[in-house]
Image (cartoon, rainbow, N blue to C red):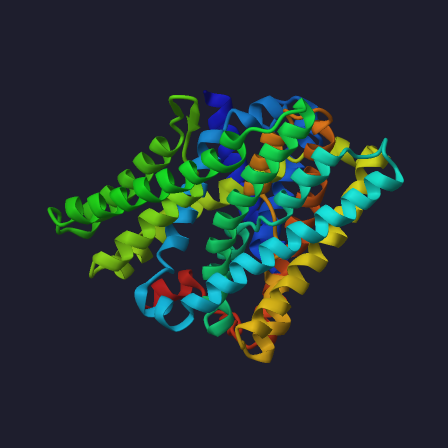
Length: 423
């Protein structure tokens, strides 16, 4: 227990100290947290096997899953608050069009490229792995996007559209992955299952949206019995924790495997709550402040669990580079096409696709599921390599795109310490 606490403290301190360096280099803080995780991980300082100095093994990092899942729940809850009816009336149709089309285009393009690679070199990658990687390619990291937006206080048409598209993208990605994984499983086993391909993905989405809506309504109902800001903050935190826990439950209804998507459940909770609670904006500001250390831990731990052994595997690097190029073209091309179809402005059309490049936790979760397929280790390693590249480069590209369209204000030089002394 003491080792875990010391490691978490080292993760927070290391991430914050490194963020001072990245600020001087004009890089987002997210990049600092990820690099800090790599340095503290089992392939750098952790390899020294000194208790408390970094994470000594991947097993130790995986033991902190409760921290990353909780952080992801709060991130999804925050993104759900972007789905306010006022915004949905103005850009809801465009966000849905872009969210669906760019994800589908990305999946189809990556599928085609990897299937062609299979036809040319059958021993490099199998058809099931190609299909699953195509679906994983559709997923965008909501956490990295949100952290960049929060750090630089970005606001404007592109930022608001981006937050909606990222949320929709994860829902679409879940459907695409469930269908692709079902088909890949059927090809591997030699028989198709309608339950796995069609029924179970639909059941998961319906159950997730239903549970999220219920929790959002309950949070608003219970929150009305408390009046002090601290108690309302506490009940909000408690409900998000409860929602994260419930979303991990799995059960069967006859032959159907039932479960929930943590991201969908928590996003729906935030969406319902923000639309029925008159004081939700004020409360969300307080929740954001409370969860900042949790978000830092999420990225440091995410960096620590990246297996750097994949860099020593030539075949993984080959497929990984092809996957990154195809996915990047799919995200940019799909976003550009869908923005044109929905009549978006030129700045949004040119820059939205770049802001959708970051990829992390959701993709890694899908890759872990896909690793059960024959040859699934290649899928997991390719995604690990891609996440390593995207997470180190993606936040910076997102920042530059938001800066290019004028939605990031120049960073102020005001020191909180000096401000308090003057007060």
